[in-house]
Length: 531
Ligand code: NAP
View 1 (cartoon, rainbow, N blue to C red):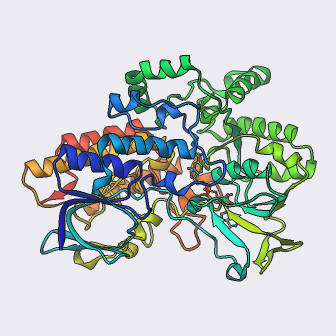
View 2 (view 1 turned 180 degrees about the vertical axis):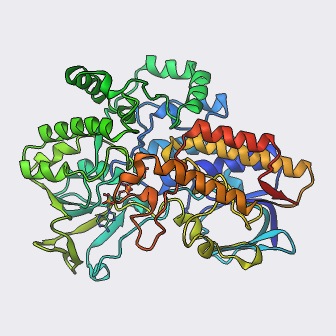
């Protein structure tokens, strides 16, 4: 049986960097295993129309190598899906990674063999492999959620999930199309396809706050400025809570009268981007301050959408702005002024079933050529649970996490020795500009493996008590935040029936989290059992 020092599951942004670190820096015999037929992870699967990143391009990528950073040119403010894929292919070539990646293999199980201190990995292509260190680089948003709607199996047309969009072109021209879901993905799909479909019916469960992205081509001056400021940017994104270049203003919405306040909102609105939420320091912290931002956004939507009833459905918010992931859009609200776009409010007109030809709601029956599910993910825990991980004493991860995910730092799990997670539940992950957190995790894991090897240690796992303390810390921070005010939020598992309802990522911000991780490393992993 083939045996490796380290096996990495996934060849997206995190898997690629971890492969480079394990193989080229630690000299470990390493293999990455990837379900897809190529590298890219999220950006391999999310090839839906309009797919584009909400992080600004000069901050979305690796910063570990000045050469890699500077030999690549981002041409737009926000990179689109296939540009990011090209970027990752560029990095892969530079580091010569593909020769150590096994594609088209999905992990079906991973079991820890206590007597041998090895992980036994099986794939759907009947590969059986052993390794000392197992590193899950499976992504936080990779388990696509297609809701179990009655009748879906009887539908005769084709249906798609945004996160599993086919490689082969999907022809939507002059088709009658349903779109279920209006999160970050749906808000990008709708304006892109509204131009070509005959009719688009959007099924909205909860209205979302959306800020204009204001994407643009980058001028040569701006590109050069970013390249010249590589070090500054690299340092800055480590210091802001979300790993972006913007920081939160220290001013309060209540320091200003209505006219002054709206002027500040207006300036931030015209600039666009996720930075809108940071134009005052208390928008994301205090309900009354938040209400001012929420009213401003509502007013903008009401002024854009001509049909008053439709505008009302789009602004019937049931949660504070930023309590769910805010979305960026390009002409999303404008499409509701087109004759070929219709909005269905699932709160008052729910889906009863999917029929052979379309969708039946409480009050209507629709016929569709195609259905698009922009219905999100079984976030953070879903991709890990699908690996069928079994730790020491035959402990199944599914059982261990049946009431809540238990990790220390979102990096390791008690009773699962030598198993590392990049961006796991309990880490800032989805609350950040993802590549920034990925680099931090990969570097922490690499340093930990280096420590173990140097000290000639066989295994590491967090103590049960440190994992308990970490869960309590997350709960305390989440309870004090606005995140818990959202009714249905994938941050706390509400979107998946049967999933534990607890806040999953670490909400204390990236700098604070990084400091904790650094301290643990400096103190030689006192919170862990090392043998
Ligand atoms: P999402 O934010 O979870 O949105 C899913 C949408 O589907 C929501 O509108 C949700 O309604 C609806 N939905 C879910 N189950 C449903 C059901 N059974 N019936 C009717 N509607 C249902 O998923 P996403 O849009 O794919 O985005 C997920 C995350 O991925 C984002 O928050 C972001 O972190 C990342 N992402 C980023 C980008 C970007 O950077 N541009 C793009 C795409 C995704 P409720 O709100 O009521 O749950």
